[in-house]
Length: 455
Image 1 (tube, rainbow, N blue to C red):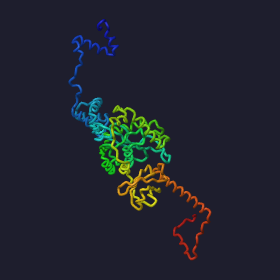
Image 2: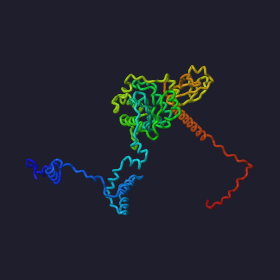
Image 3: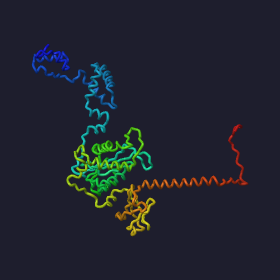
Image 4: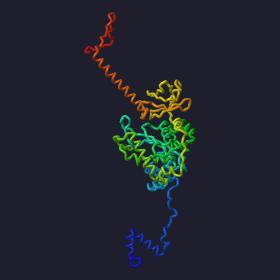
């Protein structure tokens, strides 16, 4: 059989990869009916199966059971039921096709439960900020890196971060070994709100809305009071459903991929622990440089604008507290009651002094302090700020409360070792006193316990 110009049909079919019988059938239909003869016929019963509808509903019901059954198990049970009722026995391919045709949302809801269904198929509401500092998001994550702690032991640090929802810029962050807490959140928020000492870091101010999860470190009464005093609205995501805070989750992924993974000591979960190299202070320096020099200056994939440029656009003026003391009163959550002595305030074995305290000797005051820096404390009298009292021994340096406690315990251990060494020498050199026997002491009673002769 030939086409136009004497070209054999067999050669055309071979070159086009079409079976010869199919090509012959197409040519025959074209010569009889023209182009309409080549239109593919639609079968009215396509997709319909020739067995009982009840059997199909049985297969679907078995496929929606929890725990999930395999297609082979469902096929065997459907075959047994079909034989008992005298129905046509379905093939395995037919059963598998019925299972695959089920709505994935229906299968997820039936087998994985409403929580998994909600995470995949519920309509998601994403809060959109229209200007800088309208919405801030905060969260914590353990970093996939091992660093050296104060005892030079390997430990995994936590990262607490607050980002501006509109610009995606980092407003404040804190890295430490402690698990997320109210104090860590307060200190991070304090850093985020106040003006930064680093000239590269411009993001600051009081946000209109502070958007967090339902953790205890966010839902405290203290944070509610802070929000009321700062005129800042608190919004929490639904318990167990953090998807509305997807931006900060994506931010954590960026931090791990672009900043943490190239550092020495990086080890994702499930991998062997490497030998730590960096200290916590060095890691904080690396994170600061990454945020300010790279992340803030790089075009964001969703906004198309660098975070710092987007935050500064339009001549935005952030709203700040009147004084840093006001912010300290709101955010430093460790108040202590002390009495002012003639030589100042005594706290943690140190003495704090300021000329303002001369008028309050003998008075009860409230002190507040940053546990990361005990060089100074804030002193309040009847809820009124008095002064910042400075410890002359710690002036010009930063010493944390943990370091003070660690040094104190080390000193006690050292003294105990000296005591033990001295007493052991005395025990060795001095003669041991002989036990004194009283002359009229009664003789010991013989034991009633029977003993063997060989003993």
